Image 1 (cartoon, helix red, strand yellow):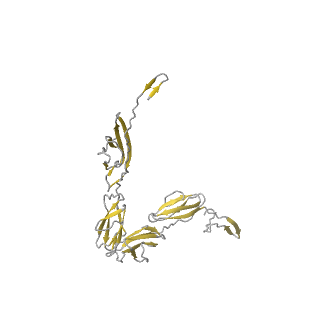
Image 2 (cartoon, helix red, strand yellow):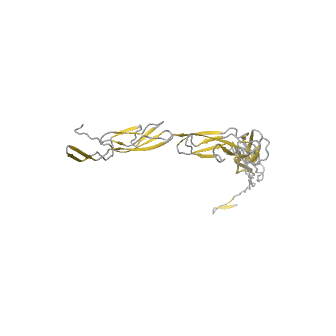
Image 3 (tube, helix red, strand yellow):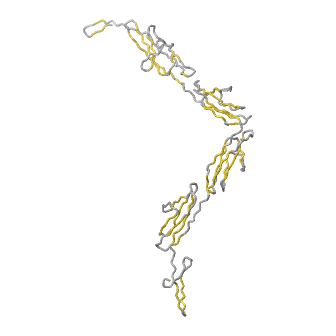
Amino acid sequence: MLVSNGGCSYVVSLQLISTAQTTLTVAAPQTITCTNPQVTLDASASVIPPGSTINWTTVGGTIVSGGTILTPVVSAGGTYTLTVTNVSQPGNLTCTYTTNVVVLQDKATPVATLVSSQPRICLGESVTLTASGGATYNWGGGLTGNGNTQVVSPTTTTVYTVFAVGANGCISATPATVTVQVGPPIAGLTASKLKICEGESVTLTATGGITYNWVGLTGNGNTQVVTPTITTEYSVYALGGNGCSSVDPAKVTIEVVPAIVSTLEDVYVCAGDNGTLDAGAGPKYTYLWSTGATTQTITTNLPGTYSVTISNGVCSKTFTAQLINPDLPQFTNVVYDNHVLTVTASNPTGGTLEYSIDGD
């Protein structure tokens, strides 16, 4: 090459060095799963000049075991970097090429659950077992198939087991179990309330059967709404699907608490005098007056209407009464005739009037 600066000319020799072509191609790896615990980082389709240095590394620059070849095998998910370094001759020119590849990992272990349509059956009946938590299932106890349900007819009390298998092939660490008891049903009976006030209703709920035989009540469903007027015991038998009955009935007693009564009544006193309002005593009675008092009686000289709420721990009832200052009787006529004194007076309250002369 001729180079001139206007007055002088120089001949410069240049040598162009062509580096060997390097192309990195990495096939997409499979996902690491329980059934596919290792995958190959496959860069075998890459175009790499002979003599190049190959290194597979993880994040942080740690070299992968066996990572000096194009196809190492790894067993953990993560980001892997392929670095290829070649030295082109002549000139000892160093070139470096890199590419990344992400390996996914799915080793999530499913958790199996198992329920029975009935926990207890009569001999000859069947129940449906339903598993959940997996894509497929490995049933124990000689059951076949990998679906999530099984229909069984045990002749004795039996424990059934199942493992959940995930879509990734992972199997639950422990099996789910359920026990199906074979024998007459065992009846159970509960009540929404065990103590009620007179006139209240209560819901009875039976368990343990397919249908129920209520003692003294109609219907065969699992609930009854009753309104006892006195303390009453209720009983029910549980029936299995083929009609077998529980040996013993379930029982519950509903206590009807006596109605709250009060002796509270209006009190008449003269203006300025004290009057006592008495709510009356009763079993476990507690009191709350409109004045805030919590005693059985209150004493006041203020006329007006007073209320008290009486509770016995189960029921409560409110009663009212008045403290009244009555209108006083007034003389309306006085007549003295023929040595006879006749006095006429008003009687606003309608009570019995008493008379005295000169305070006698």
